[in-house]
Length: 464
Image (cartoon, rainbow, N blue to C red; front, side, top):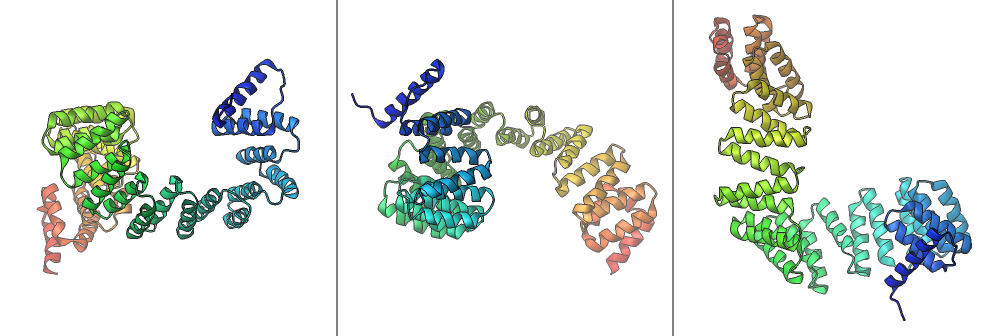
């Protein structure tokens, strides 16, 4: 009875684990130990891999491959000096073993010595039977030093050696994208497709490049070819849906998003986009239904909560909008987008203390938009907190030192507090920045605007 390679591996692992349970030491050849150790490493079971290495070396003390696996574990654990020493010993035994150069390069890479790592990997190319793997490693080293051109070249060599290595293809396109070379990326992908006409991944990437160039009809054709190449390719249906939305073909977009729900478990992205499409065609009930499914499927997806909140804000149903944004904040109280909406909704509902809290929280979380500073100062003034309003605006000046709106508000607040010197300083500053914006003073600080001394200062600048 013959076993295939995978069955042999499974048999070895089962036999090995049975031996561990019984404490009855059995003999395994070195190839079996290699398979067992690889199995544990691939599944992140480092302690079990180390145990297998120890047992393997006790039975096969001269096995270079087992010692190389030991090096791999040492590198993983950042025990680089020990790994270096062991590699030097192995190099003396097998100077033409490519794995020794690869592991040495890995150590150098961990030490941020990427050029030295590249040099060693190029040496590994002289001895390897798997050029694709080594070219991929060289490409990654170039990525670490932001040399995208050389990274791209090596990933291309990797793909030439193994045209099924789609991770290399993705990395090539990543380099093109970073270099903003969309046309060049399309040219390369078309060249690749001439040799591999049914590569769904390549067609998918062509479509994404055309999408970035806003050539939506060409993008649509590319995604159709990706689907012809693999009718179960979920990514192509999702991207096709996005293109159809851009073309305002919302019903067709919905159909493509729905196909993804049939092919796999529902994704929050597809549900959200379906909701957006239904809203665009005026089917509010189905829009809300899908927004609700989105947040149920992924409560941490802020786009879902924002979609349902913004929907009710557009409908001016602020009570419902507040209900949903409160639910969102209860899940993630550190999301600045939620607090901005919380503030706006409470402002619309005339819940000014809560609105001020929302703007304050947004600022604490790093949202330094001018609108946030201005709205908060206006609310603080309304609440009778003029000192806090002034402090808020002085903080705003640190980010917007030449903004007339901030200066007019500070002028108005200082005049209201009878601090005429500071009021005059800020109104002159504001008028110098933008005379036309003195309407801010007229609308928000009517009594101040009609003061004779203020009128006189404004008149000076009007004449000038």
